[in-house]
Length: 347
Image 1 (cartoon, one colour):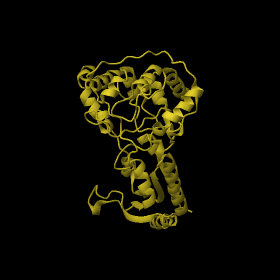
Image 2 (tube, rainbow, N blue to C red; image 1 turned 60 degrees about the vertical axis):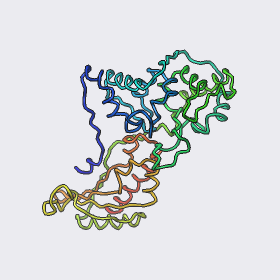
Image 3 (cartoon, one colour; image 1 turned 90 degrees about the vertical axis):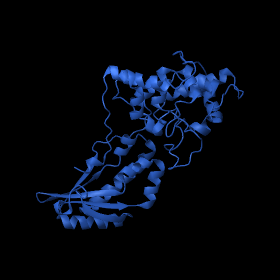
Image 4 (cartoon, helix red, strand yellow; image 1 turned 180 degrees about the vertical axis):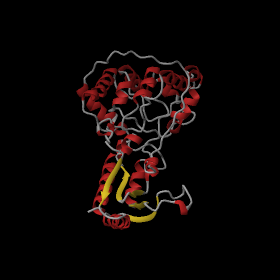
């Protein structure tokens, strides 16, 4: 069904263990370059080739980040990759490193989280968010102007907390990251004990419920379906009327198979109705331009064996597909809009 074909499916070619060892660049290009840049110079994602980044993370952090991703923050969890493929990607990322590869202790850092919370509010929240939720949006400059040259990562995120050791977080606070707004807190005047308190506060995020920015909507069914008691022509006209009633403008009506075959061979019992709300469209694109793959809005009306059905993609599936929880409320709103229009048309 064409509605299901709206989903973007990325097919990753499998590599043998021997190939993976030598194909880190290819695996990186397939899985990472779209966000982090072909040469690791950054884009939506952080610049992985930045010397100060390379100097303040260890290989374990890279491995775990690839595995866990950042729920709700665009970075997916690459669970489909084999261990040797992850190793190859990490090795390729490290090929940009001219310095020594850091290693960090796994021992927890002791500190006062209550004091760390005060320090976080004073020194970290402006970039990383008041609750450590990270910067807004995807970081795509054509969709939303950046407040900073690099998107501040989410610290109150299960993927980050599972990947970063206390010692690594402490090292970043002490060293800073040249080329980014992240300064050395030690050089800025904070004593090591204060830095330990901040680390302890960040680690305390693990004990709190997931931040809204780390939630992904759970979708039982990717398609919304309603049955119509009317014939095909009447149902189509009802949908058009309901679209207008719910503050959308009707765009066009066309056969489902339009463009897939010649006009004389299209099935007249499968109709797609396109509609849009410009305000909602602009808002959605400003949060994540990838939403454009699913726009304009559409409802398909199908007649089979005398029974008429209405169907549409469930917008809440975007939350899981794009891993951007900032879309969640709009996904919920749009799902309800589809349901309201379809149910009004079938009353």
